Amino acid sequence: MLTTSMKVTDDRVMTLESKVAAFEHEADKVEQYSRRPNLRYTGIPETVGKQTKT
Image 1 (cartoon, rainbow, N blue to C red):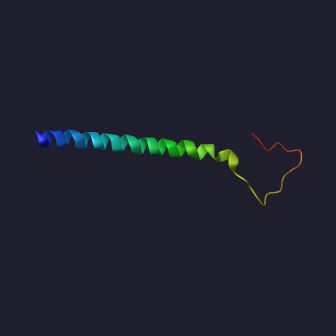
Image 2: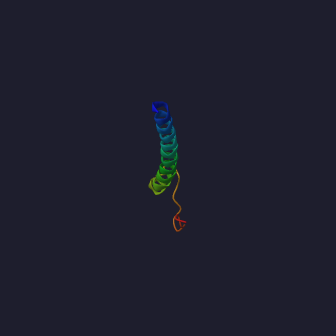
Image 3: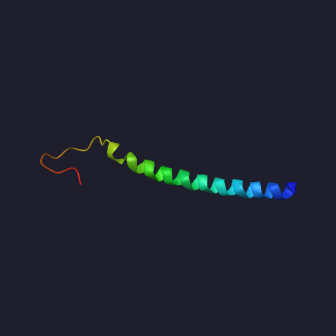
């Protein structure tokens, strides 16, 4: 009885750990793109009249 209960609990923990890892990976991907517009480039001359946003 106790062994069966532990097996069920272990399976559930493994499933939840897998889901957490997947959610962390997705959160990292989303966070990466949220920082994209905040980049600053230095040392590159700015061209007057040229459109810099795409």
